[in-house]
Image 1 (cartoon, rainbow, N blue to C red):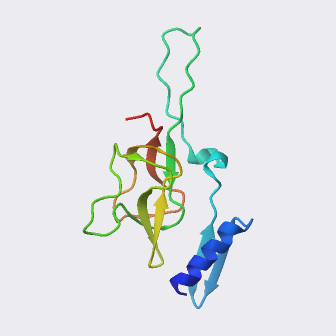
Image 2 (image 1 turned 90 degrees about the horizontal axis):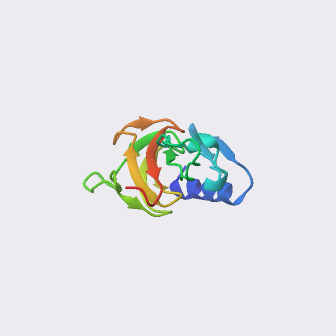
Image 3 (image 1 turned 30 degrees about the vertical axis):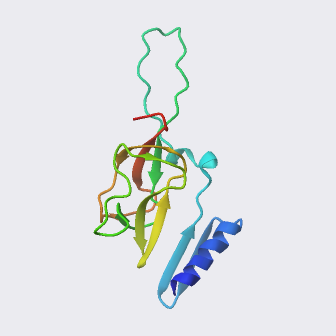
Length: 148
């Protein structure tokens, strides 16, 4: 199956109400999963970092934005750079914008760009470059845009 057919399948899933497409053709299996938008993402995708203890129990804690854990959308090989001779797309401390490419996953000899869903600051990179990863594995921890 060629890249243009895979792109057509991804577009079909994106535009439709289906959440998953699993297709096998000539011994090649393609599985496309649609992730919920960030506002509707399941709680497993977002992890709140513990707030510091308050000195006074009678004063309410300020509403703090939770860090976001970016999971791998599919099984594949995790790459931090767009090419072997290029620098990593992001480092710890990098401020990112929604839609910015933060890593690449190679799946079935196809390179898929993974983009940030929200702006913020990269607090941790949780996978090693070139490492095989499973779908759902935590790749990055992103803090609110005001974090550093």
